[in-house]
Length: 311
Length: 219
Image 1 (cartoon, rainbow over the protein chains, first blue to last red):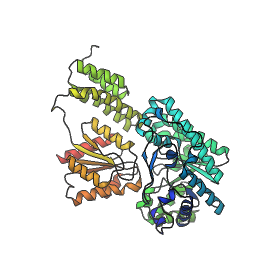
Image 2: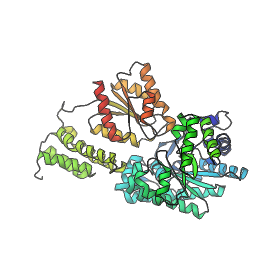
Image 3: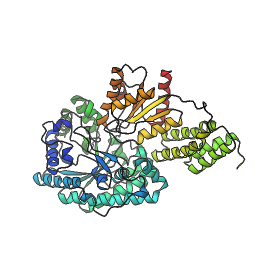
């Protein structure tokens, strides 16, 4: 989850979009973010496009205020996907910068966890194939869709391995396309759960824990969520983590202070939001989704401080 | 050719859309043409009715995005065949709508769903695509004589741009003539009120009702 808000970059030492490309700037920015926000970990990269870029799509790197986005998906249909050789993501310069930045941070700060963030299999697939066609092909081109997902998932496994070799302590998988709101329960079960689990299992084999973030409302996909192999489940603000915890036994919950509140609310609202979350016995307190880059630093500080005081 | 009354054929077309069946939609549309059934009626009472049902199923969470997109393909397979046979003047365009995803954002699944639901409900939709600057919404709405601007965003970062559109309309004195509706993941009724938009829609099916309401205030 990108926490590189504009407020943190104001001093101008390490800024985006340049830091998306350069290991030194990236680790420097992660360092700034950690220090100024009070989050208890480093989280990189600051984008969700490097995986798709490595597998063929073009990316617009955005600005200091705006995250990178897919310019054009490279393939019109799952049938057209050109399968690149194994370890394709490693060949991307930005991916190498991310891994180098992870190494720098984990060596410099062995006591602060470095989280490597990966875009999940469905989201990456829907970023290399035109997403409207892709979604239809989940129904009418099942074999080819599964082949693409398996290919993407294996590439992500290699990439996660690289991050872990570099020193990542945790891998966080965010898969915004794998939301119940888009897929519904059947497709979530058929496409989201197995590939997220394939990825999580491979990461577990390397001895590293996994956070899985699922966007949007999860009410139609509760069964699927219970089948996920992540060590912690992070969800969006509209989901009651307290309820989810009572429904899925043994679930480690992460979240879910509204990013909207963090951007538009004030410090007092943030504190009262934290109080309500603390009351639900959430295991890992975090923003509910990616922070808006315009989120004021004072609100993020109020959040991390309130959590620490509450503990 | 089967022995179908006009009503049966309409029902068949509606079912083909709901069942995501492009081939049947095309076959029955051809049959409607061969039998010289009114093409506009076949769309309006058949295909569009099916899409209405699909939209309702989507709102009720029976159907999800892949299903709705496939229903739309079945609808379009029929519309492509029937449209050239519509008698001129018959098609009743309700209101022109300019739609797009605000700049900074390239997530356009939601916008595309809204667009297809609006088109199948008789609105003329001008799609500006994704990553659209606020200025372009205003300029194109003026150029096209559109009554409604619909803006979508999936990222909180980009919601500011929606505000910008409302402000630009105010500055140019167009606020009474052009209605603004917003939607997308992080957007809420509260946000719509805050920026002075005329409406908010939580999903593609609701967007059609909202557009109809807004269009009525323009008339």
